[in-house]
Image 1 (cartoon, rainbow, N blue to C red):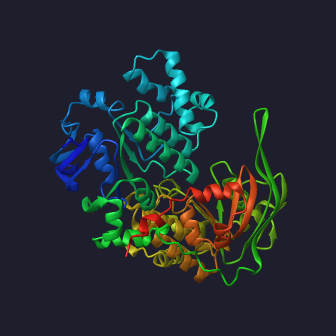
Image 2: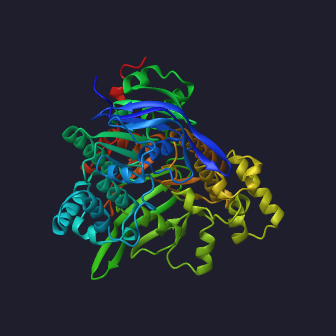
Image 3: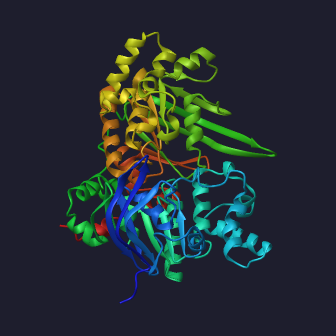
Length: 536
């Protein structure tokens, strides 16, 4: 019998806090064979990332291995020296970290950072390394790879930075790649390309992949085996079909019930679908000057959002989604065209009129980690719009903030906490509570559920539907997650390169896409039907 590439035996991990150790992984055992993909799925805080960090020796000084061992190619590495781990990293085992924003050195070019692993582990000369860097950046789907190699991380989007990290991990064709949420910041087409690339590497070089993710559909489609993790413990494990068919634990059943990819249902059409428009965008064009070149971010775009409905805006990075949202919020004015919000023409409004218009349209940003002021309590954060736009007393603001927190199912004790004391799902609920407190007509949801586990995401989507029904809200839902769009949106518009390709009711567009690009987007959705065909 062959020796497993990776073997984790009775592993217990914790974090040292003063004189105590808080356990986060409890007596975990599993194996990964050469050329195999093992997906670890579970909620935030379950210990998935801690486990991944321990395997590659990156837990940090306060990380503690209390019990058990980790073996790589039958070599015990759980207590290996820093020198030995440095020799293994990149060449034998690589990590694609979760956060592209903090994982790259801001003062080094992209090329320097990709080249470093080649410089440390290969005899390649400088020019050979530079050529290899460009080839790697092209392989992971970066446009103009030679230019990207000369740029710095702040000049790249989050998705681009994630692809750089994947290029670094792939550089030496390691025996094992640990991919910690490798596609969470990527569009579906780019995500598919990256996962196809990992599959190719696996077939060509026998590389194994430990895939840490909250995307159950991707895990089920791409992995050979699933390991379901909760609160630091394995709930169940096995080959994909077995786990899907049996779902022995209640937690696993909840995960599959909450994952939109495992439900083919569409949101029922809204009874107000043909009512007065909440938003009208008429032939809007927006250009940006970049040095001597001109970039057209929006090209003669027209669309209408019916009052009380959810309209999704989909398309890859750079398609114009964010530019359109900024125009609706009044952060910038289009070069041409009209924007009508709640029957108000936005062109030529005075500063005060524009300020008042912002009460009618609010936004929930993608990242609850960075969109909430870390110096303010939850009570101050939720009540801040009232302080800026109304003359309510402090006690009245506090009462309204508490009432809004109750609507988003957060307990009163959260009011006195700071953002860092909340989970990711709780922070997103706070961001959502803040948005409707001024009784706006329209709320822009900018990837508002993309960073959430499927169970928390399902709770947030249900909450948003309830708030929409109670308050008559209109949502513009910007997302690259087409399975969530299918479940949540009444209608959809598809953007590419600043052009509106098509628009219509969600079910109709998914069933009968008119453009090749829309068909490409839909084909990139993980297909779970074949996985479910044997399920009773």
